[in-house]
Length: 506
Image (tube, rainbow, N blue to C red; front, side, top):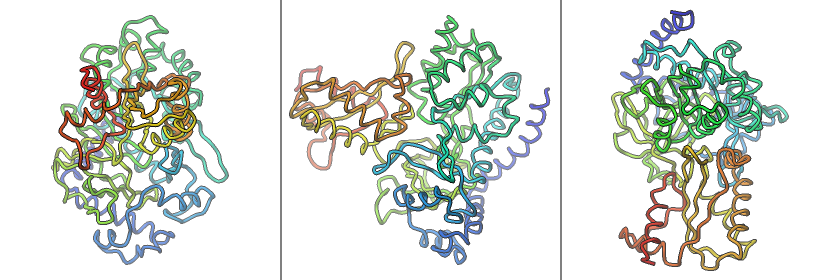
């Protein structure tokens, strides 16, 4: 056994005991996290504003601090970015993770404190290895390199703060010794031009002993197909014969599972899901035989849960661990060691187990497409379509959109089915405007569309008048509060509506 596996085995055993402890005592663990956060932030502006020093129970906390979204936090975050100290967390926040925006902003800037960086994100990275090696004691991942494919945003300096997408922030701040086990080296990993970065990654890694991947499935599929094209090989194990695990997250792996099996055949490959976001690291697949994840309760994040149908309501009922039930769709609320307090992250989850607390990601509190990490929301779609209509004279009656998933021969895209009252003079021009507006509204969509590498131009397909009405009728959903879903992360609605068109029922 080498030095790294030996050390990890000893440290990992202690850490696995800690994980087992919060599995068995989740309420105590979360109470400890909550009051640790409150005590540390008592003398911040937020702490004084909400009377943190007088809070002695979760009920006190929930009454003292209102639920917030990014728009509510934006004025405070803007002050943080100008260098003001002790606002929502002690000291100065220098790092911010840039992610896709909301209704009113192209990009969000999520504060990352030293504590959230080390006690949450980097601790999670170590826990992934502890859990994986615990489940696979014969692993040989430490005999080679871990290939890391980060996002395309470079590190940016603006006044007193530094920002980039989360992967770039984590790569930049990683301890020096990570360079010995990771590939490519930091200089290449942080290149902004994804096409250039991809070319350099391929050239520098195809001759190395790569044993693991970590990142977003859609980005890696682009890499894998490029590697096979460059090497002339038919599957990835002919390039990296000791590759054994993909630690994946960011988007659903379900649409990609079969193509990965085709491109990486055999039984040696493992897949381990994680739930990581700019706001924090939330879950890890600790049981390889199940497709749910363990909620990580000791990363400096206090969780609350709101029944999804109540999200956004002034009378929403928030509850903590110990009160939730299996099978219920919950919107996730977090308070963190990065200075977020009762913050709605926009994701929804369903618990599959309450002993311990395991869950699956069920979606977003808003309709969205995030098949490739683009995080496209309805507000983006409505605004872009409105501009496309204004510039082309078109009038839209109904629309829906969803992903066109990657396969071995093609890249990903979005398909839009649009019922026009008045069609544009050119569908091609309409599509160009739509695409351009989505890029201007959503930085993640813009990044994924870069040079068509990961996401190609959207496909806009007009459908006959009455199509959506006929589809709703076929589902017994005419009238009342039933609406056409604008965006979906699957092709369920698209394929059903296309079937209606093909059946000549309209």
